[in-house]
Structures are given as structure tokens and as C-alpha cells.
Image (cartoon, rainbow, N blue to C red; front, side, top):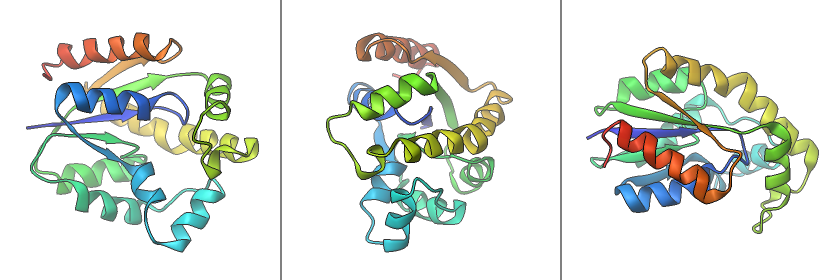
Length: 178
């Protein structure tokens, strides 16, 4: 049993693709964003509302609870190299693939502003830009961490939902994830 990670900037389509991947490849979807948005912790809600970063310790603790003896798709975790190292330490099962969806910032902003659900952190362009800045500064090194382990498959995220998903399916099959 192994796990798959999906990484990309806010608005690149991770959530949409994750639902399709989990359905078609029988993986449990673990979305850090969903876990954080559904927590009762007011401090976490305040950080999210401002587009700020939630600490490694807090996120790792929440994710650790979610992992169980089933193959998982991790969406939004790990976001830092420290979280990636922690995952290696506490997770018995290896990460077999990191799907990296590459989408430009302007396209991400356009998609976020066009979302139907209009989450609170999607309404303010300044907050969206802060989230993108955080992605570039703290999450891009995670991609390099996994690239050095030859686990990254790059996906062009600029197509429509179906085009992007076809590329993801090819990457999953290439890594023998069925």
C-alpha cells in the first residue's frame, strides 16, 4: 500500500482532480484544506480567513489522525519540507507518487474568483495573492524534496478539467497505481 500526494498552487484544480482520482483509483481523500476549514479551532479559522499559514505541528497532528491502513491521496499536505520529513517518519507506508499541477498565478486567481462555492478566503484578491506567495515560498521546496527522490510527475494544469485529469491518470498508471 502506498500514498499519492497532489501539490499545486491554490486554484490549480487539486480539489476537483482529487475527487476524480479517489473515485477512479480507490484512494481515501485527505484534504488539509477541508480538515482545517471544518475544525472547531477558532485560531485556525482566523489564520485561514487572513490567508495565513497554519503551523507544521498543527497540520501534522491533524493529518496523522486521518491516515489509516488504506491508500490515501494527500491534498494540501505536506506543504513544507518539515512536514514531508515528518510524513516519512510517522507513515509506515511510502509515498509512491507526487502529482504536481503547474498553473500560472493569474490563471489560479481567475479560477478562484470564478468558483461557485465562494469560500471566505476566496473573496479577497489580497488574500488570494498571499496564499499564492506562501505556496511559492514554502511549498515549492517540497516539490524539490520529492523530485530528488524521483517521485514527481509534472502535470500541465492550464487545460480544462477533463484534459488535466487525463494527464493525471496517465501519470498514475505510469507509476503503476491502479
